[in-house]
Length: 378
Image 1 (cartoon, rainbow, N blue to C red):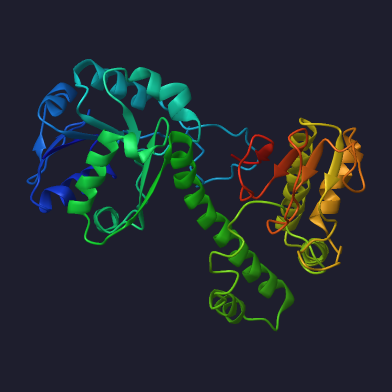
Image 2 (tube, one colour; image 1 turned 180 degrees about the vertical axis):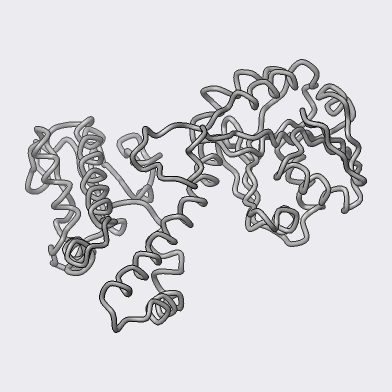
């Protein structure tokens, strides 16, 4: 199996040489002059494609000048990455590639980019999105010991994606560990990659905020707090709360964030993460309400409570969504009567029966799929 890397920068070169160290013949090309004792540097993209079975495109997707975070950006207009180089490379690849060859992009792009801008450039084979989760300083190790292999295709159906399977077979042979495979559509693969990175950014922002609070308040060691949280494996560092559905509620979560808004102002942090959290919570509830109202105006919610098997409504997200349903012209119906057009399944444990004239709106996507069941987020 012959491997080709197009783009031999800070990502492509270490990865290409790591694969070569595994005994593979690796062809490489970069627009800039490169040297390597481990890979076969070619003079053109055409040469790489003609002499490779799997071609991995590691062309940069740079940000605009002043948008890399080394200087303030929060006041600037947000901007997407620049995909010009990737487009040029994929267009050139398409001129020479054959249908049976594997062409995979490993560069970072935003969700929606491949279907909208990049896939239309590749007509002679099927474009695969295969982003890497790597960190500078450990690129080679990360490539050979990945937390997961992310593979995105047009339809996201692994059983019918023969080129994707060839790519996965390659990683099975080259990786030192046995990484899990996360297979999906282009958009799902794009999202896994970008949100993986931003989860880390949000985590750091939160722990550094705790540091700022400790500095302002005194009598508080940030490491005592963060170490206690780091050992919390039931909810914080666990799969808990990683299933999208209804938002959080109860007598603690919303009110704690609201109170911390006051503390942030009182001690002069200069920023308010909690306002962003509460704004997002409310906008997400409003988005859900608007989605519900697409299917009818007379709405029945299976529960008003924030938690199943209780009668507690403190901080109820169900009631918050109901607030926005009414705001946007919906009518709340009590009980299953002839007026009901949409039943909202508040808790993923709720059992519902409805005739085919009534839509069941399921934010949890676990109720049995049927003609009258609508999944939110899928």
